[in-house]
Amino acid sequence: MKPDIEKYLGMIDDWDMPREQKIQLINDLWRIMENFVDRAFGIHPAQQVMQKNPLRDLQDSEKIISSSCTQKPNKPPPPTQGVRP
Image 1 (cartoon, one colour):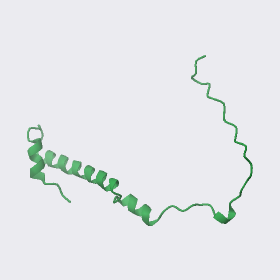
Image 2 (cartoon, rainbow, N blue to C red):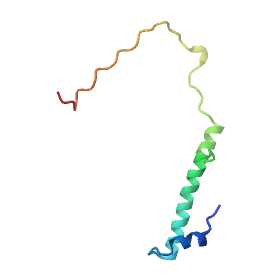
Image 3 (cartoon, rainbow, N blue to C red):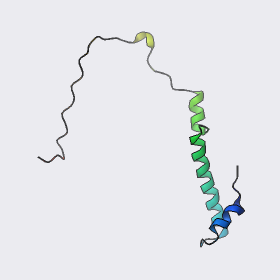
Image 4 (cartoon, rainbow, N blue to C red):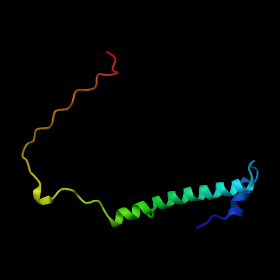
């Protein structure tokens, strides 16, 4: 999809830059906005690839180890660097 250059040129007529630069700016902004929309609706190429090849769990469910241990791991002490007494 291409932007309507004439429509948007009218919006930046009073800007002090050459016409070619204005057209380039419109095209660049159009591509940026297109990218945002593609990402928002899940049609960005990176999202499509992930849907085709979803990440698989690296663990084999048959080899899971179970434990009845309820002890929580020790928390590390709070940082002392940068703390004033």
